[in-house]
Length: 116
Image (cartoon, rainbow, N blue to C red; front, side):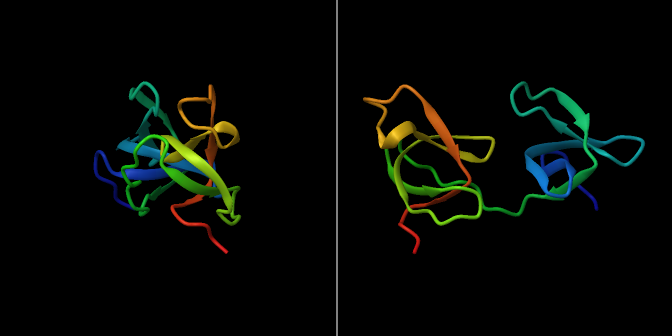
């Protein structure tokens, strides 16, 4: 598969373990190098790399009410949006808002409406 610099990709060392990244270049062994998610420096090559065809996350205001759930689950727990980080949604813990919470938690499944 061909990638272009700055493509959004999903990378990992096994088919089921993939996380979002930004593609930089291919190494001599045909493994992709990515930008490290925190430092943006050139990171190690990974065995698996797919184009990330997910839509860009929506721009949400801090404390926007959202519904969240675990991996593959229904988004049925009410929370308040805190931030996006590496493609994952983070919400204030225990349903609190930025005015009362001191910690955030990431969620795999989210929606702006409760899923049934």
